[in-house]
Image 1 (cartoon, rainbow, N blue to C red):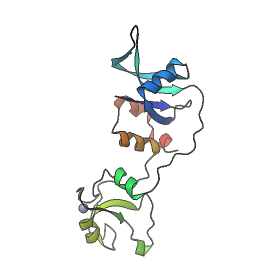
Image 2 (image 1 turned 60 degrees about the vertical axis):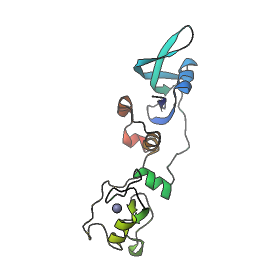
Image 3 (image 1 turned 120 degrees about the vertical axis):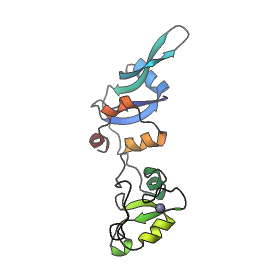
Length: 169
Ligand SMILES: [Zn+2]
């Protein structure tokens, strides 16, 4: 409950911040409240304030593109530290769907998390050739979806604001 979704002036998702920071932005009239947590309130000694859940900043902010860096660690994170074939979280490696030897590249869509066993079983073939099925289609994570999974938060009331197409732009 301690994070707030921040939208840009054009309603595109920008980042996630703390409730405290969101409160200050609204208090200083730099942002407006779009959504609050009804069951909660922020209290000072003499007053109470709405508990922010989604805010929109008033002036458009140009953000340098925040891509998620392609790395072993981030692939594991995208795949929730689970082998994408059997689901184990032991002895994880990176698997090239189209093997390197066949021109497969190291990209978000060609790399998945696989345990040593599955990786060995798959060998230099494609998953289809050996009858192995992926649990998820590998995708390039958007910054926002990554932030969200990193914090373990997926708030119901955020969903309408997190249009994946916009978020990955
Ligand atoms: Zn496996």
